[in-house]
Image 1: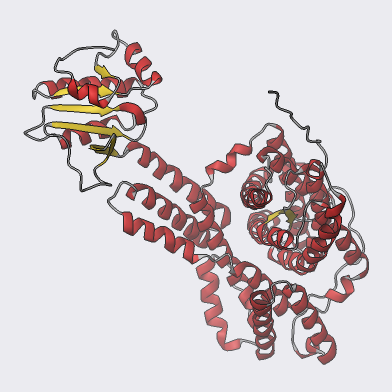
Image 2 (image 1 turned 180 degrees about the vertical axis):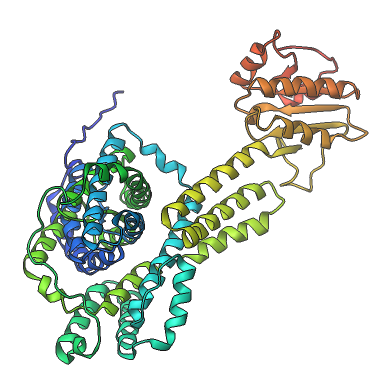
Length: 567
């Protein structure tokens, strides 16, 4: 029976097999996403430290080019809080306090991020996402969300913003509480309450757009800007200039390669997670390498159109999927509507209160402060501490907390690096101390006594299973653990090797030394159910191979009265 393979086009592959019946739900979804994207793009641009319109500049090419190069039918690409905050933090040291240079370098960062993404997709580096564990990403996002929120609180209260990490900024807010502007606080908190209420009780209504329009109307009707309310101010109408940003030198682009890798890593991890989530719901698959290419193309396009860095948005993808989107036609619809906004509606947003914009940002990221997930990791740790899952639970919780506090104390990219580093160190610790299970027979199976305390081991015979390969990093731990199980009545130890898929020379030599040390105590050591690679390494170990008693099953190892030797 032959398998038929369908060829996915290199350009607009996500539109392959498009059906006419999808057009209406795609357009409706596009309208819904546009209502959310416009105010949030303005808000995220302020997070990145650039003029609000830069967020709209970035959205249009990002949506079009991702649709052309990416593999997800549902992912919405545009400015996002995580990469916006990271962009601001990374560009600040290079800008030297020059606002125009800050904007130019922010645009340059999008260009470099795009080129790095395209190169990474071309050489098929999609597997790098697997090095950011879910706990690390969760801790990182919680820390980043808290940092974004504390950065917006001064605008919500009408006070000066402090500089520094989360704790320094929080202390500044506390010191400034005596000088808050009452009208700003009223507008900001009312805006925040409204957008959260609409999100909670009227989820189909674009709450962000509604609150933005109400804020603009209030300024126009009551002259709030003349009463001390800060507003967004002038937004350039029309389409952006196309090309490389002015004032960015060749050496600047080289300096931005490192920061671009950090932006790409975070954007790719968040976007791929959103893409996979909705692909699973709709019954198709996404290609990690094409996602890298799509993200690279989106950032390159954003940068060449005077925009900021972009990435896939979980929240807007959720809005897109919830509105019934079937394909990237919804994203193309959003792009067209955003162009119309740039041409005809920018004047509308100039009267937007800064406090309302801050409320939109806070409402967008507050749901990312997911302490419940961290609490769940902690509960797993405390419940299973000392059990066979204790090390894994400790590793996950520690990595998440390290990433979160890394962001809160040292900033965004260092926080992510700290989280990954802790995760990798704990992974090395975990593989160096694998679980060595003592087994007991339950019916026809051999099971872990730790999970079945009602069972008892066989008299005089200890059956063990190492739940990992045997190699140099864990050989001593395995030997010590087996030695600890020996009692005065032990006459035989059997290693069930089925769960040890590989062994290296150090592991093989450890087993030989263990056999000899047990023999001096008149204890027989045997191996059962070894797999092919395990057996081959035993035979090929320098010095003529390791000679052990090897049996096809635990039962045969127990039943043989002879002390035979085989390789």
